[in-house]
Length: 224
Image (tube, rainbow, N blue to C red):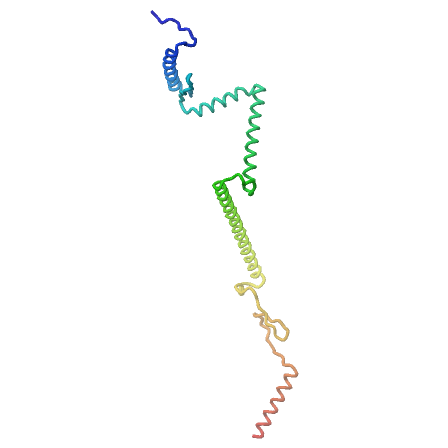
């Protein structure tokens, strides 16, 4: 003879109620595990007893199951204008909180509103600032080195262009000594490679002094 139909209602006897809860709880968790394995489903079961004790099962992790459930529920309720308004209000509140946090961090980095921080918090902020300053200095030095290298490259190009121009004007014989010096003789500039003969000129005063000295020397020779 088969079992009679059980009326689904609250069991008044506390002992019977506890026994039934234990049996059906184990059966429910077993069925959930079998469903997850057989059907490759993501299953999460949460049970609270009448005394507040928690029993749960999750095929992956309960946190991921709850997050997936909340996301699916929000997407399902997007079509409802009331739910959509609540969703955007929640997003706006979250963005305001993020903005407030960023503003507080910015003020602390600028050295403002530090009264509520402990010594540990101040030390952490100091380390963060030192790390940031180090990164800025490294970037600045790298930019300066790149600029110096670029200036050196341009200087070498200009020097090479000057040598090429010198070759075109003066030929290749004095390329290594690109700067030609000039000799200043009696107010006339004569180049180093000039083939013009040099004729030094003696002034009249120098000539008279020379003649006087020569006459004096000849007179002494005659007396001797």
